[in-house]
Every structure is written in structure tokens, then in C-alpha cells.
Amino acid sequence: MRILVTGGAGYIGSVVTEYLLAGAHEVVVVDDLSTGHRDAVSPLAFLVTGGCGAPGKLDEAFGTKSIDCVVHLAGRSLVPESVAHPDLYEEANVRQGEVLLDAMRKHGVTDIVFSSTAAVYDASAPMPLVESAPLRPSNPYGETKLRFEQILEQRAARGELRFISLRYFNV
Image (cartoon, rainbow, N blue to C red):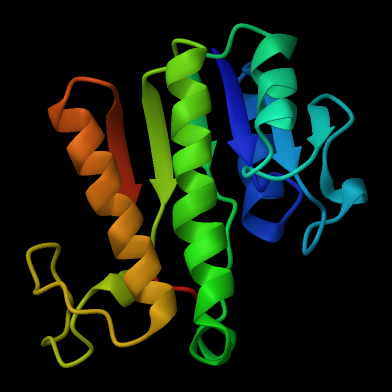
């Protein structure tokens, strides 16, 4: 498969890219390098330097190869920062995600794996946490990730895409 990895120069993104390449997939990485590192991107992947909110850069990435799937790892993820600057999280985790989804539709890509977070759940939910636990984020970071999941659900209901959200804890 040909897979576009957003945030592929970050810690998780670079590891995902390595595993995809090891599985004989072709990988295009989109990363603005604001928190990622160019050196973290395998030389076997094609790097487009730019963010998910830049339609021109996304067109470049989708035009490089015929993309089959997107793994969306880009975004902001620091809870204290999200409380201090919720507007940054709204922009990075929701608005730029919508720009990515629009670019996917434009280029005929319908499959996306989304890096969400367990921060979408109610912090007082009993442990071990189960997927059916109540969704009640306690900070802007979790709120923006949940809002983007809801956008994915809406677009999937319209038949625009298929998705899976991975809600893991950041250790």
C-alpha cells in the first residue's frame, strides 16, 4: 500500500513509518517539523515539509504517489498547553484535521487511521478503562480529539470515508 503519515517526523510517527516501510509499504510523510525532526524520517520515506492546514502541501503529498490510506498522527498533545492555549488545539487538532479530510476527498482517499487519545474518556471512569466508558474529556486536548472523532463519524455516515480511532494512553 501507499500510505500518507501525518506527523511522521515525530516520535510515534517515525516509528509507525519504520514499521510500514518494514512491511514493504510506500510511505509519504507530511510534517511541519515544529515538534518532529527531519532526521527521524527514514530516507526510504518521501517527506513533504508542511502542515495539515496547508492545502498546497497536502496536494503535493497526495500527488507524489497514489495514496491508499492516511495515518493521521499530526496534532498537539500537551494537556497543560491545551489549557493555557485552547485556540492552538482547536486549530491543530480540529480545523487542520478538516483540511486533511477535504484533501483526502479531493484525491479520492477514503481510509484513515486516527491517533486519538484516552483523554476523551471521563477521568473518573472505573479502571481498567473499556471502550464503552463515558466520553467526557476534562481538558481542551481531549475535547479537540473527541470533536475530530465526531467529524470523522459524520463524514463516515455520509459515505465519504472509513476510519478507526486509536484511543491510547500516552505513557
